[in-house]
Length: 204
Image (tube, rainbow, N blue to C red):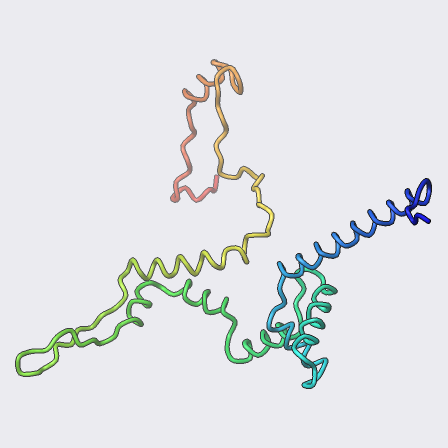
């Protein structure tokens, strides 16, 4: 007796086979995406702490990858936050250092960079010592680099301010557009009243 399916049974089997093939393809694609987004040493560390020292490397890697899939993109894990707190506890924020350098006069940077260096030796063995220091151009370049690194934190996300007061801005004069020829002539030939002198006192 033949076991080949015919009719509706054959159609149903074909649908199930196609669905299984699509499911397998999606699963393989997901595994490839996991390989493209590898787990970090911090993920491994957190997974080992959670599983304990008896966990095998395969178990640790599987747990780390599973936890990584459940974390929102761009989120920071606890290990990163702990490292940031420890670094800041050792000294000032790097942005403060950048601002200090940027706000220091180039002459001060040049003076602070001075150091003695043995340039050569005389015949009797006496060292020829020279004093080297940063050039003015190098000091200005250093300040500019620090300012450039700080700019995105200061003005990168702020809206552009537009001054609509027009204070101190002269009127635009265009013949035939803003003024007639006669009005322009009156402006050019206008006479100005003399300003009161300081000796007048302003009293009648």
